[in-house]
Image (cartoon, rainbow, N blue to C red):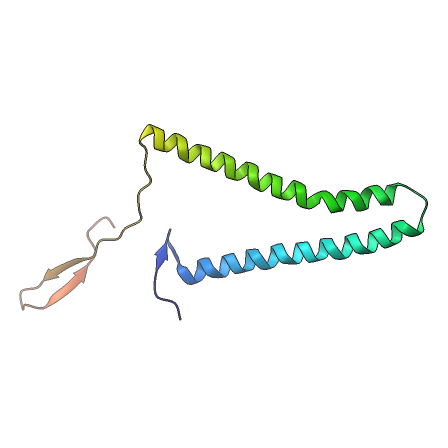
Length: 116
């Protein structure tokens, strides 16, 4: 279905499947959080205690903490990349060399160099 594109030793199809699963898990967690928050808020409205109100507020603020953590991780990664650029360190682009050798009968064959 997908062309045989290899990225970091994995096929493109595998990367897309992994990303799709991660997105589905993320959306499922958000949906579950919304359902729990809605039910807890409805329950908290019926009671006089503040504990359930605090719990509902905490669940409501989880998005802020989650996205703040993502922003912090992105800032760290971008700073590392900037320091590598300043030091002149670059990342190797993954490549693969295909060696073609002619045999004695004139036919070409593909071989892998020794040690690979």
